[in-house]
Length: 279
Image 1 (cartoon, rainbow, N blue to C red):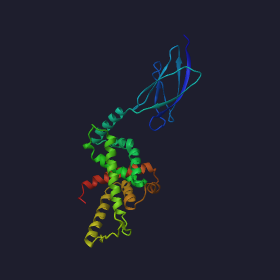
Image 2: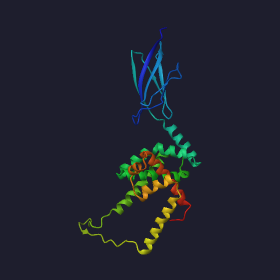
Image 3: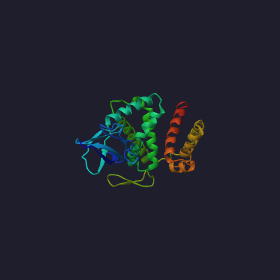
Image 4: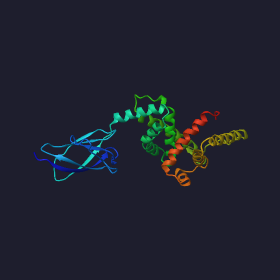
């Protein structure tokens, strides 16, 4: 029986995103150790070929395994597409949720990293503004994490999270439409009549102005209770109203780090607010 070596090269990608998959194990029944795909999804493996048609097995955590029969030839190039295992993903979500309920910051971070981009792009399509989408994404995760004990494992976590995010974005757009109503432009009725809005003066009286100022002072005092790193982020974002890019440049930090730390700063601020007087 003739036995010869066959070198196989190929590329492994995610079926949904088309992105290369790193760390995919490529093995055979005779070589269980196998090889692993690189950062660019590339792999090269040598196998022994006899009279039987060899089979390559592709495995990766969270993905359905693939068995691929190899027809011996002078050279073999494979293009492998792997599909995520939905059941494994939901199981992983539920495990992370249980850990998060016990206070694991790693679990919170993992859930956010897994869904943040998807939530952001859905919200961005709704509101059409990148900064608003960033803020609403962080708010959505904050609301979801605060209600995590109410999540039912009978449903997919992603569905529950997206519902919270979309409802939050809808509320934001409703408020924004009310705030941007022009008082100078007439409103046309169905009968074609043009009516100028009769809007009363909503300026604050001295007592209301005093109460609002006291709230601002209290917010400053609460912010002072945070560590310097988080306090600076809150001040730049909400008191100076800088964008994420401007904050990143000002603090000489990657924008991803700014977003992650600002999310944590908001969580800490929320915790301090809960123990303070009701605003």
